[in-house]
Length: 437
Image (tube, rainbow, N blue to C red; front, side):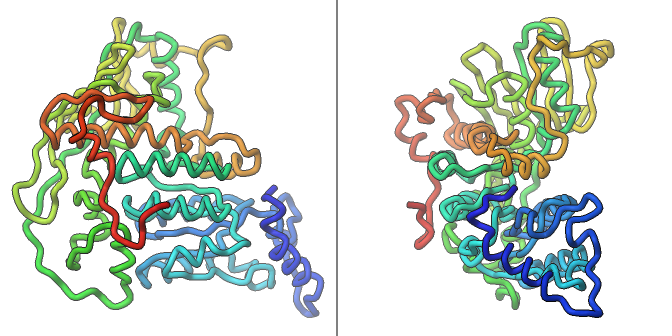
């Protein structure tokens, strides 16, 4: 059930609406929670903030859950939020016709969404530089949070978010959806249970990026709140390729190829290595940065991480016949995993995990796991703390490549050891008034 104190007004309204409907209206049984359906008054209410790209994909997943009701969408672009509103209203068309659903509200500014007392949770699909500010605001307003990966655009902000989630007792899910797939869980269980012997090397593969030329300043399109899109990032003139997918390769908003797919694959490496709540102790790497143009994040990379348990993780954009993904290498063989699985010996992939062996967190639907944990108040499969550790690996690699030297890291304090220059890069500049207190 949803937290009762948040839903009194909405429940009262819906009960009154049902009680006062006059003939000839006929309310379908599903709208009342009959035939095994969940009544609207018992559903978790969700608002989706940032509804383009992965924000749309996540929204559609939540729409498919019968005990969730999407009641609002928010985006700084009119076209995005209107498209999302239409999709939500069409999904609930029967309930809207019966009078048990009033329609999807639309917002430009996320602050109006988190201020609503009748919303239980938010799903955040914005660019990376907005992940922490919106998540923190939502948690302080009493909302549980599902937020796309990477958790943050810098290590310091990610720790702020973890502390806020803990302080306010909120449920948080990082959008590293690969954790909720059988192949990934099974591969990590095989590794953790010694099916390839003692692990010594883990290789993660990310795609290389491509630089683009300098871009001209352009007028801001109608219906796009560009100043709010920039938010906490430094002011910059509008150009079309700064926004949408391209923001990933501009360091004011994201961390390039490393924090894009690397946030998934380095997370899997951590899970199989049993280091998902800690991190490496040494980092060094080389990267190819654009010499000019709009993008400024690394395009090709190779980063070596050394862990206290002796395992080396190598994240690179080197070509790999199996594609992006993770390859665990041990004294007795290897296992590769992403969407598919492969191993040095096919028999490894037929091995059963015994009842007394290590069994990892079992989730087969990332959004479902979030909603179930909202009801139970248990930790999700990709909590804020785990999301912080997986995004930290990516940020550490970017910092090492930027400085061009080996760095020593204390995963307990989340500080570089005896390195003030590197520690200054734990934070990103923040434009007023978006400083997180």
